[in-house]
Image (cartoon, rainbow, N blue to C red):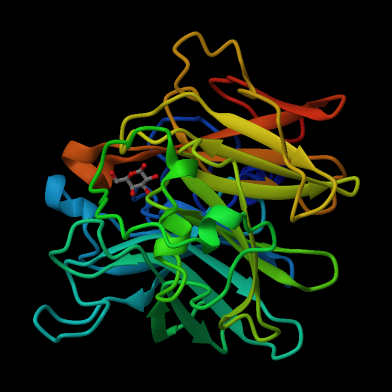
Length: 374
Ligand code: GAL
């Protein structure tokens, strides 16, 4: 009898050890995702970093209601060894008290934080889209913060409009001309798709380029790139970061001109660079885009919507934020998107789906419940 009890206990312990601290053994796209405290993960517009055998998930901490889309708390971090079970590591970059006058004071917009590790300095560097409090989306700034530890605390350094004083590697003559200053602005919604004739780039040459939805990508040689929706969201910029990852070098290119793409996610496979992006419809989901290139500065070739069987043409009711290579499993990548809930921001869900490859192209199919091992 005793040995049977011991056996049952041992089996139970083994089972729960396999299931990890929150008991999750599958991905359930779009469902509530409990962390180790049985609380729905709060890390939206997320970015991922694999460091010393552990995955870290950084994202926007949202609060209840519509107001919960603003940065009322800061950037939240979780850690995991298996990708199903996530441990709450707390707020790693906290917003400053309201009326403190800080760039990152509570009530600002702080979106899509991404963290990368600098192999030379050993520092963890976080970039994010920052909009000063009370100004809607007119600021179009990129903020940067740094830490000695992956789980922070991160120290805010500055916010910039990238590449002031520099033309892109693929500048056109019209950008250098004397076209009149434009008074376009973007505060949600999209603009007419004739951006190439508008010379928004030239308008912003001296003061720096607009940068909203963004991601970071570190190449095999350790060079890091900041990829952001620029020129009133009409055009994607890919910009090289300095060796310490804390500033822009002035080398950048502009791609998908006038295509109004947001939510960029980049990965590399077999020497080719891939991008996934969304259209530009605010919190409302839209049809995904994808592209491939042999070089990070182009030429980029659009590959269309990677989602197969998505009859709603809404990226399975989500918007891309990251494509995660699974460590130790060659050719295994996960699509990670947000299913926003703008009326009750804290209830935003996560859509994780497996990526498959067909020739030069990657594809994504829906799964209600799945695991990497199957
Ligand atoms: C989305 C963008 C989000 C957020 C939202 C605001 O298009 O991807 O990060 O900025 O618009 O409406």
